[in-house]
Length: 181
Image (cartoon, rainbow, N blue to C red; front, side):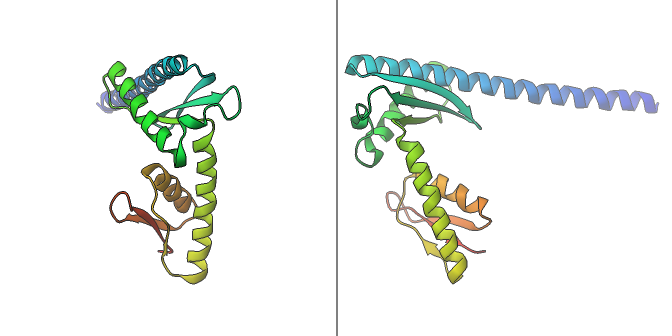
């Protein structure tokens, strides 16, 4: 009897593991399709605008990451716009194109000319400064309003430093508050 129970338990565990592996594989496949759809959309846009750029596709965690890399420095700056406003709009259009192609809501992240990568590094530095101030003063530190992307980067950096943070306020004035506990 115990051999039957052991075999049954082992079979159930193997089935659960296979299902989880299959889910992960299908999730990665969906992200790959999402990235490919985004790349096709962006290539068409670059062709129409007569701009040169290389498109890199990657998967980070549970998101497709698509980057348009400049062939000629400064040529893609107008696709970023002031404070990344044009980039945000382009990301939403690219997400819509990916959603149309895959039938699933897209959460892809788009970077153009390294803007988001550079902004991410600035935000991590800002978060580290806020962590140091919160630790030094033991008082909450309120940062300036940020976009959802910026807040996520800051929250992640603060959590990595071992402190807690929360967002307060309403868009477009939503901000991160850093606390020691």
